[in-house]
Length: 273
Image 1: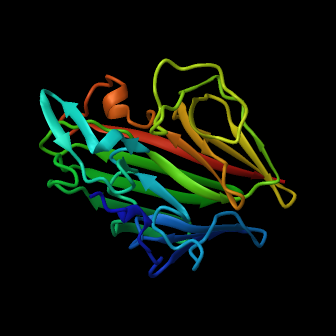
Image 2: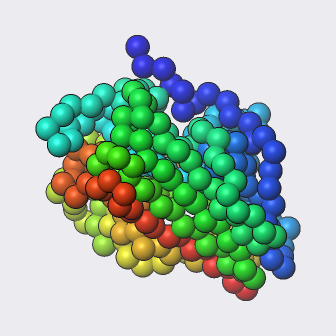
């Protein structure tokens, strides 16, 4: 039977703070290399670790690598071979292997942090490779960059971020299209016009997303064209830029990352006033 590893508790461990002016970012390298909290003018923006939100899947903002969202039943075919990933949430494999693993600190200054993770070459992920995060703050701005580099094996890849924002007063989001979900709750093709929320869906979007909360406005932008929005919980809204849709290994025919090559993405947070 599948075991729901994604629901197991994951405490933050030691935190590293980077800051500029009134913007502070606390990072938990040992807890999936995730951002544990973002605070601006004393206002916390993320759902933090707590007794109510202790599952590794349910707090902070974590990188999704080497896949984002679900892989249906953990199964996919790549370059003529069939693969089975461990199913870590119900019947599916979700959010990659990075969000529960300890990341290594490569660089640190008061305003930036660089983390890296050597991906496994086993049943959890048979291809190896390396992931690298750059996290940097300036006044009113947080910039994230994520890079996945193949090792000696070519690999499929989808990368992205999964921030759990505390429930906003307002979300401004105008996507161009969405992926319908099937009975498994997984994205399918063809894409269709967006429907009204609440959502747990993947969208095609090339415009900034705005979150309004406590008199502040946060603009989110990325070079990713796929965004998952999960706003069904009463306490949180997730706005997740990804390089491809959930189940991309089965749904799309993107070119693999060749040995030594990389896929990169960035995610920008900008606050006003």
